[in-house]
Amino acid sequence: MIVIATSITAAFQAAAQEDVPQNFSVWPGLELYMPFQEGSRWGLFAEGYVKRVNFLKDPQGLFWRLGGSYYLKNGNRISGGVAWQYNYPYDNAALPYSWADSRIWQQYMIRHVSAKNKEHLWVHRLRLEERWLARKNDPANDGYDYYEFETTSRYMLRSQWYVKPRLGVAVYDEVHLRIYSQERDEKIFDQNRIYAGVDLCPRQRPDLAYRDRLHVSFHVECPRERTRPAAHKPHVAHHADRRCAAWQKVSTAHRSPFHGV
Image (cartoon, rainbow, N blue to C red; front, side, top):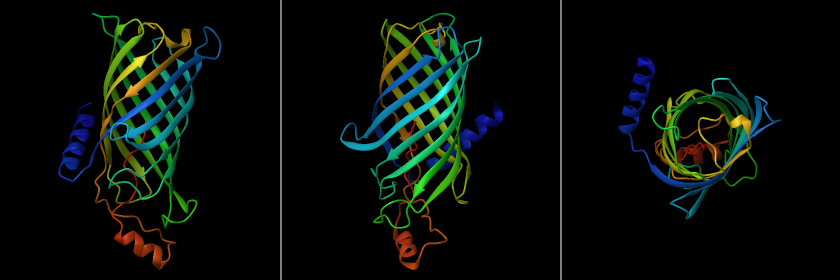
């Protein structure tokens, strides 16, 4: 625990020394938990979001995640599956074209109900994502020239309250660390996401396992993200011709810092 805390603190200190853009977004979205059959420990997990930046003014991205979950007897959950995100250029750190992000993901979620208040839930989520990021040598070209691979590790601490039978509020902080990238100069610290959201759903006490029934919730999320530096070193593909390489040298955009849910 001391090693993890020290690493995260060092990452924040390194990021604080650079010119890092801040973004305030709104993500209307839908989550679904559904057992394959009543009483089964195996279930379907799905979520989707429409992401807007500058409150609701500009498009930021489209996202969906689909997978399966296994519910342990202690209420914790093991999940895995696939995800896809389509990103739009929206600030000075973004790529100058729209691009797709395809993922395979695995996660372990620990749920802890407060002893003093059964309507208060703490959640720890450990997630690992293998990602294929679509790239172009020239933003004017159609299609993509290659895919950049990276692996991201994410840790989230979430606190959630049910303030009314069908209304919950939640806050969380999530740290994204890039543990592998084909780009040798990529930084380990990717982003820190601070979240506040509203959860509208059928009555579902947090001390009951989700696997016992269908759970559908509508989210309005307002994350404030610390994204990667705007002046990040641009990528020059080894197979790019001189014209494309020249464009890459004068471009200050490397890739979108926004990495989704």
